[in-house]
Image (cartoon, rainbow, N blue to C red; front, side, top):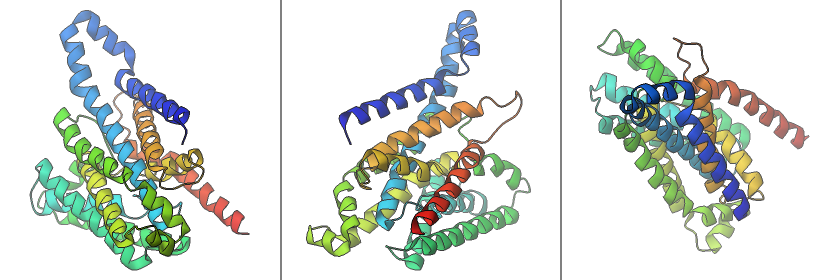
Length: 321
């Protein structure tokens, strides 16, 4: 990827971050003119954590999506379609509502364990180089199972209000999060992205086949374990704080590969920048909902991402013909 593309993506990310931080602008300007301390407090305590979470979560979804697509050699592989986010949500729900551990660390550990279990199950069911149909069937089966078990866990929870408490979180939400929560999700996500970036050459070599990649000195088994564990760690930590948000991890890597000449490994960095920008823009868009209404950000990303996914499947079918 050229330096110009990196700069353009960085500018897009910076603009999206400022938009998420400042929009809507008039209430902030009014607060700053009347009570400067209150206005700064709203920016730093309400909007800044929200923008930072959108940045970290979107970047993690983009980077893990690119790595998973490279690992499976399939453009339809992504954290949500492989069951990673559903598994993370199941792990967090079991930890909070069944085992009764609601501390952020416990939720994160539960979500990471759920995401890791989903990815390992996918590898066992579909294999590392699964065909598109096999991958989709296995991923959908895991997602459906994780979703059903999540609903069952909420139904069996000691609290009769578990469904209502978990609804907004399950749909994906960045509202009313603190700087501490942003750090709790963002630090594992950024560490995971940094380590995934070190695997770009090995992931690129997989396009030539596992035997060729091994001849270059890459340990394929170790590479799989790193990708699976890092994806589970970063996505799980974000899901524990913000809930499940879909399709960012599918869309961002597909556009990123166009900037890298089709190299899936090199797409990890641009995919992370695009993923962060997309989620920041989506977070700005949900604020356009009528006053008094809350539109979960996961609903918006699904409404925009599902038609793109259907178009992608149809496009791949036409190419095969």
